[in-house]
Figure 1: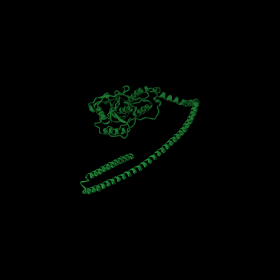
Figure 2 (figure 1 turned 120 degrees about the vertical axis):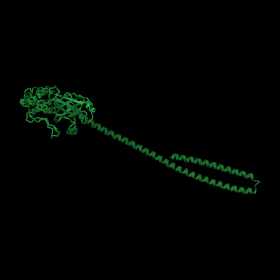
Figure 3 (figure 1 turned 30 degrees about the vertical axis):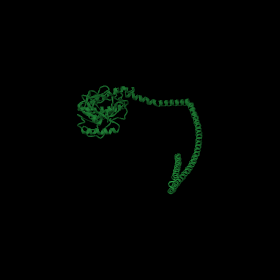
Figure 4 (figure 1 turned 60 degrees about the vertical axis):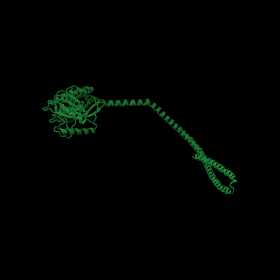
Amino acid sequence: MSYTEYNNALVKRDAFRNILTHSLRFGHPSLSKLEEVLGILLGEIKENTLIIKNAIPILHGDHLSIDSNTSLKHYLSKAHEKYSAATLEILGLYTSHFQTGKSLNERDLQNLLYLQTKINPNAIFININTTTQLDEKNKFGLSIFRLKEPAKGLSSDYEKVDFEIETPNSLEVFKWVQKFVEDYQKEKPILIGEDLDEAGFKRDDLQAIPLTEEGIEDKYSSQDLIPDASSEIVDSTLNLFTNQINQWFKKLNSALMDGSKELINSFTTINTSLPKGIDMVNKHLLNQINELVERNIGTVNRYFNELQNFEDIIRQLTHKFNSMQESITNIITKQIDEDISKNQQELSQIEDKIVSQERYIKNMQSLIENFKNINDETQTIIENNKSMITRKLEEYQEKSHHSKSSAIDKVLNTIKEMEELIREKSHEKLTKLSELNEDLKDFLK
């Protein structure tokens, strides 16, 4: 769990009630033996305020230390898991002292250090002095502390946390005080149970602060609001609660300030006049409703007519939209059909051109082949004639070598010139045909 910044604390009514009851059960000045108590604080941190919603009593005794109590360590670990699942945090511990409460002793520091390092870094520690400071105005003997730097251990400084105690706002506090007094007068009163006894054994269940469903009787009609008791313990306890409750009820309304008798009288008066008042309220409400209906019926009718006209406008717009949509669809469809027909015609013309070019190419290829054949035949004829002429000339040379040598040379030169001319002409024709063939190939691509 990470550290959360908070500026102050709020002790809710239920938490304060449990702390006070637990502390007084074992630490009231009238008791023959005073014992310290220890409990855990539950709540949450919200909007920079540490809110203590409840306090759970754990055990009582002397020198209550977490480090030396294995059962208490185990209990705190299990309680941390249990209340975390219920979206509550263990926010700290409370303990009671008899002579001091303004500071932390070494054992308090050890307990707070354990809680801030093992359970919750935001934890606090509440001290309540049950003998000398309960009359302290607004604080009732409570002091709240926290360690500034838990990582330093016992050498860490500690500081006080500013806090407020929530004041009661209902008659439930009377019921609790009434039951508290009744239980205190028993031979063996059990004002509140503990989760662990002094030996460290778990009890069955924590007993809640007892409440009563009985009404406030006439015996509470005095200004003190608390019945007399016979024993010293009851007198001391009642005086304590009388002072604190009277302080609380200064913040309540005038009915609570005047006491239960005035409240009962008020309830009697209300009970007498309530039926008549309800009838008057009903009539008044009925008249108001009728006036409201009469006043607004014209407006309602106008709104209704406007709504009908609005529906007609919507229907007309819907009809126009549908007609426009149909017209646009027809125009787009016609344009698409025309474009398709035009494209088909152009495609047909292109196909015809391709077929014509293919025929032309085939004819050209045929001409080229024929020309090649003619050229080959011409070469063959030239070669054949050359051999024949050469042979004739050789024969003729043998017959008349000396007389006709010049004439023969002329004939040979003429033949060579004719041969070169034929070759040049043939080469030109072949070159033109090759270029034409390449152009056709490029065109087809």
